[in-house]
Length: 86
Image (cartoon, rainbow, N blue to C red; front, side, top):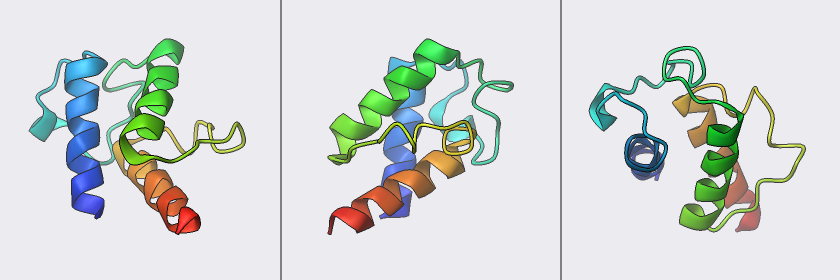
């Protein structure tokens, strides 16, 4: 499940949020802000994409810099939210 979440998020970052790096070049621990240039609007769009793609709801408490710092942290958040919905 994690590999699928990771793959889909890489495509979202590249295709929808216009991260210049190719999907396979987006490192799990790269800072989405410092390395890939996501701004506040980009993070908001990433939140919406996570909700739409994975059928989860990202509460305001979960929409934090810690949860959206890296691809790994977003994957972990989506995985946790999906597990709590089960």
